[in-house]
Length: 508
Image (tube, rainbow, N blue to C red; front, top):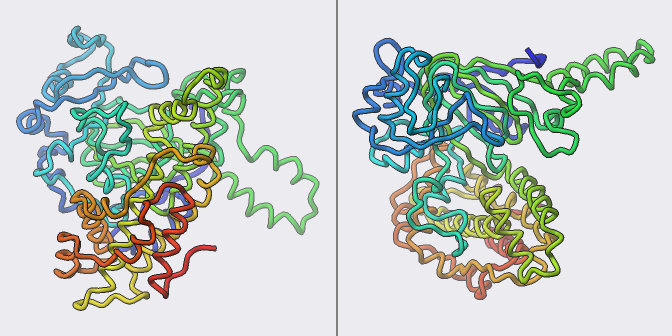
């Protein structure tokens, strides 16, 4: 083994854990955990698993066989990832069922070899089969701004790159994965530095995770290339930090300490050791929460089917902005030599950022502004609810205020970005957005999510008010008749919202 495991990940019975405890122990602290007891009523756990607790491949072929999916060849590296080919689910299952693969080989038209180990990844199952409810997202992880937004809007709406027919491939981050024993995923950190959760419908996975504070250890000298497989023979010349542990710099000073400091440093050394590689085996019907920025490599120990979501919310927006800032600086540096001859250098930087990261600063700004307006609508609706008067102490109201406060902090940081130094023409028209049926859908999803998190029934009044655009936000919107076109505008808008709800305060 090329790494030293310094700790294990907690396993907790989700039925005995409150949402507040989950936030305080794991989400706020950005710590991983495995949750049990949350998948008992999932349709997938019966339909997708046969009597021998194996993947029910016949069911997939019969019901979903025509779907076109991306399949990774785990035996072949292509650039920084595994080689991928497209095939139908039925074709994938036919290849999986060939025994033994080494003797019979694989279909040549897919460009696979007789040593290929196949792994179906990133299947947008929910979008493709909206009427088949395979599972219900656990309330611990349902505060999912990314997918709530993408159910109503596209993340990147640049007309130059907009593709009307590309609906399934880029419209959400809810996936199904299927792979035989021996399939695996190389070392990586998740898209947008989002949170992720992964539920094993059947099979067993082994996870190796490295916390963000240690992530520099898996990059090369120039902090450009990341290690592909932690069990390869890693060159110390190319990756000088890989075999190092953060414990080392603290050992020598420890020898010089007097005895009265030993207990103090013993505690800190334990923390340091816990910050190195963690490992866990995820069993069937268990859900793992992977926090932002944790690098991880995953191996299927059995034939496995899993459900995976990437998501972010108020607790990890800062991770998203940090990744985009680093990717932006790298993209700008790469083309800096053409700045003087480029008619729209900043626009080119933003297009490259969107291509490399999945969204650019303008996309992120519109996302934040739209979500701020949605929080306002839901706040106003709750305030007018005569059936169930929430009040400022309501957990739902407090969560909405927390959402706005977090967005405002990010907007304050975005004020200083170069791309917002001049008017770039990216405006969210609040009045038009508020009238948009897609926006009503977002607001409805947001209030339902809040209700699910806090186990509070949403009244008929709230549901009807949002569905019919019957909210009284006009006095706030009228203060921004020109729309929200900059982070500074967004900061002022949130101040106005929180001032309207007089018991709520904006962050310092």
